[in-house]
Length: 217
Ligand code: URA
Image (cartoon, rainbow, N blue to C red; front, side, top):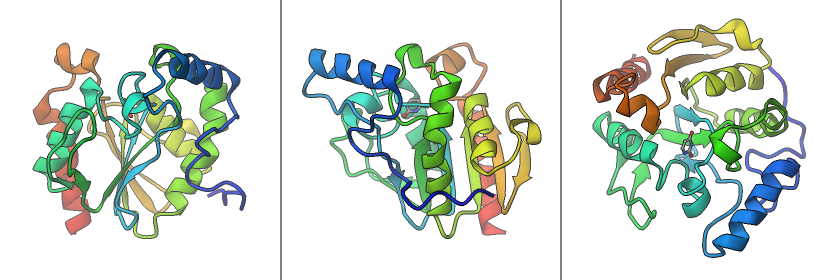
């Protein structure tokens, strides 16, 4: 497993300059919507978490607006409801983040921390942001289980651990070991996947119930 370089902490600077395309997109969003967060959305949750949920990247009007992963995104409604059902969240969820939501034994982060145009980060941006994911994982001393939301998340988690992207199984509900961790894959809880029925609430809940079982073992 790679040791993050000492200067790479688990969270990018508020004005992280690393990815020119994402910086330009952030600047355009800030010019159009100065009241929005418009920066790398910091990981959210319990610093003693045993469960890490890894998303793709902030949505422009979601985490990029509110500054909290999945907050204000369509995907956040199902994610936070499901976390609450399986005991990994408590409190109310508000799409503007004006709430008392707290994660319990759980943290949420993104493979890429800045909103990408069209919700699609480039592979070079994934690579540039990956040291933060490695550092985020390394900074969770009790971490046991990671839930990856979609292929980009799964591949980046594997690479962040110094493994090949092909080292894990793709698909929904698949499970494998990666170093000291168990990885559980889920389809991303995006609007496309939920509206088409590719991912149902029951399928999503099953992933977090499995995480609960693994942590309780
Ligand atoms: N919002 C996030 O923060 N991450 C995603 O992957 C999708 C929406």
